[in-house]
Image (cartoon, rainbow, N blue to C red; front, side, top):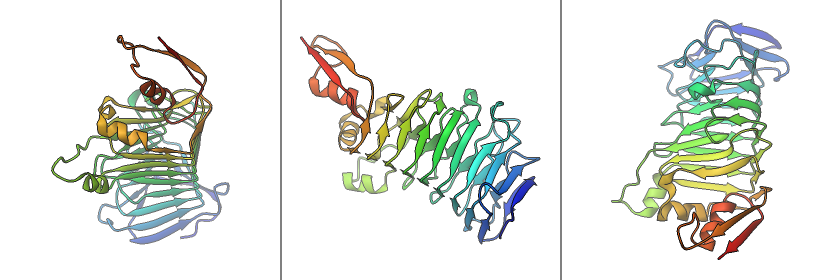
Length: 308
């Protein structure tokens, strides 16, 4: 399906074809707006094996929803959906939206070269730009998120086997987040003690970040891992002083600390210098190794230790 240049006001597009490509004439030329519904695109319920590509289209959110339970602008509930060289924006970025741009339930969804710019979401009600529902997964490649105000840019629940969040060559810049991270990843799965460690790793969720940049964020940039530990990795990522990596208390154990210790490679940062004290009499840090790991995890910073 080739979509010519122009602005299209649509109530709701329901995909019934099992194989379909929607191709516009570029994000500066082909624009689809949601008119009467918070949702402009979704897969029909009986089209569970849909394979769909969407190329070169801007999705503009006009209807921001009236309640928190309304459908997202794009609902991905079935099939394998790829968005390529697309853009998402809002007509009115002053009034916060009650629904995300994308709500994804599927494991094989891919967004490649997709931009999200100058948008605002209802952070009081924990609305994020992209939501990955439990049972789903997501792969992002060369995407950018610029000047986004929301609960988090991406909120992903990976509480299912083989649910992965793979992010490569993406930028998160000038974002304001209320959930302590541009990306918030949750996992409620408990590791099965009756199977081997190798088997646990094979079926567990994975979240990796390759050559991603978290810079100049206004509030709570970086990544926040909630719930139980699982496999993560950061390779050649850049964090500045506005972005951090944080973990819930469930990561503070032998397995969680082991994962954190080998999950970083070639990452850089320019966090501000900090001086901390180490004491064996009840201070926050009781060992030099603990202090270094606690203050430099996920980036590099100048750390001055006062011992005694």
